[in-house]
Figure 1 (spheres, rainbow, N blue to C red):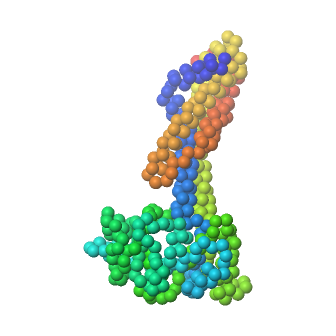
Figure 2 (figure 1 turned 90 degrees about the vertical axis):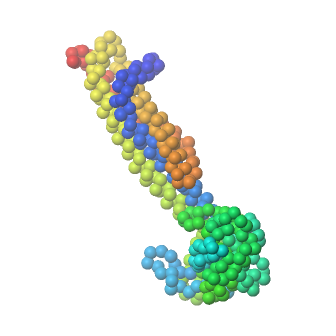
Figure 3 (figure 1 turned 90 degrees about the horizontal axis):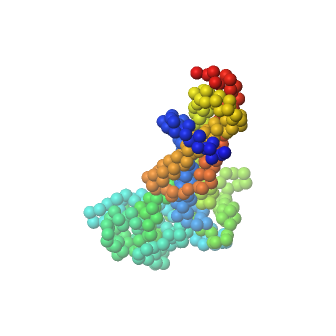
Length: 401
């Protein structure tokens, strides 16, 4: 019985293939858009998390000033090495404490030059950022304490200035200061904030302070907690210590900020998820439009086939059989649109993921939900026309021209 009903539904749909396709176009667009948006959103979220993870594990950033609307960070005093040593000595559970000062400068090698980020820091910077040296070495104690002009370069700097050659042992000019290249950092690519992490030159902090910045200021401090140590506890302890050292009274606002990378990652993920949900909801409106289209065409079909319905009822067909026939037609149309929409959405998501450079992550649950929603739309929007067909008076239907 169900097979015959399904067969009749396919015959009815195939009579007007173009009209049937246009009927389900709304379902195709709606399902395709929802799957594409959710899949791209999942890939974007995964990429953001991966990019933030590149900045280092269990990591906190300590910077002078407060950042946010209406907050001026330029008025806050900078840190110095005494602050760095106090954090290192008085806060337990830290794997690395890396002071950092940075500036943009022109670097020159032979006839090649470029503007890059110069970062004065210590070897603990590499530990905090989980960043390894693929060629050469880290700074020696003598270079760190004596202020010798040694530097470690990123992959972008190597590629732009040295091409395929090894930079180790070569001498760069950084702001007209000769600097021997002693190490090459592993390639990291772009961060989650859009900047090229490989376009960097690391120098010993003391060298940077003496020969580039001309001050003993420390722009920021990077903290890396040991495995199993709560970053929330480290953050709270750091805030208490710095408030005491900077003589901030009770009730007064901090003139520094301590950011946990976990909080930043969660905020980024939350934002991406909200945007994905909003885009998916907007795309879902197309499903409603598609359902209305199915109802409209099924009502037209009932009108066109009134005499056929009357003949079936007159020769003994039951109302529920007529109801089932038209309901199955609506569901088949909707499911066809759902299947095509799923394939279209996955194709669009794959193309967009490749173009944007984000992972192609398919969520099987959204495919199942889209398929079920298509079936539900067919049932809901097909029921009223099917009910009208089933309740036709056979005599009046036979008189219909």
